[in-house]
Amino acid sequence: MQLSKYQVQEKEYYSKYYSELIGATIDSFQMVVEDNGYGVDFWPTFFVTLKNGESRVLQLSQDPEGNGPGFMFGLSNPKQGE
Image (cartoon, rainbow, N blue to C red; front, side, top):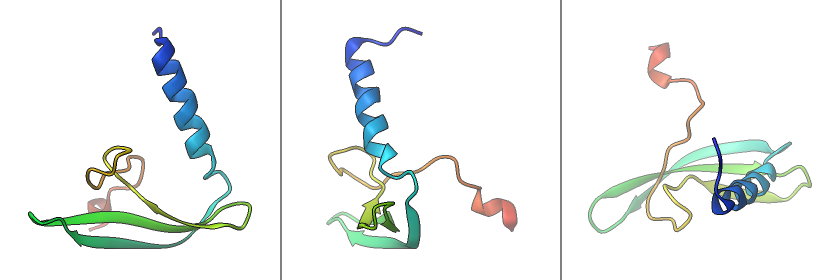
């Protein structure tokens, strides 16, 4: 697979962006409920401490503009334990 110049730049950007999480500790998690005027959105929100000691609040979004909550792949399916 050949990536375009733009795709290579995008991959490098996101790799650098998410690499900040290496060594971070998840201190807590909260599902933040927000009334969006048409209904309710559930924002997955993580409270973390970065490797350098700085605290951050991280929310998953469907895109960088924050147009809606998102989904993170790679975790266990909670229904499997039922």
